[in-house]
Length: 66
Image 1 (cartoon, one colour):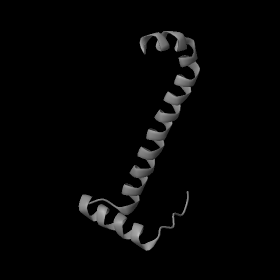
Image 2: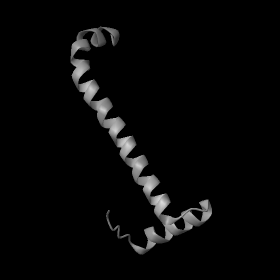
Image 3: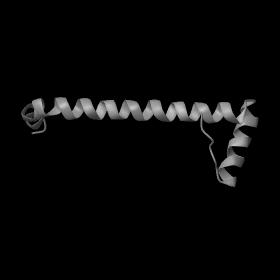
Image 4: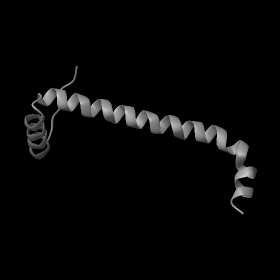
């Protein structure tokens, strides 16, 4: 469990979004955190795979670029 402190403008934006969606501020914030973590986890995984696999194909990719 954590306590999240937001500046007034971010807190107000979160409040407006939650009212618009008919959800609690906590639910909206939790979803935003989940989406952030999932998105960045996918990007990091893709970067890791590319870093590991691309070197094997450098010569072929160079030829394709000619």
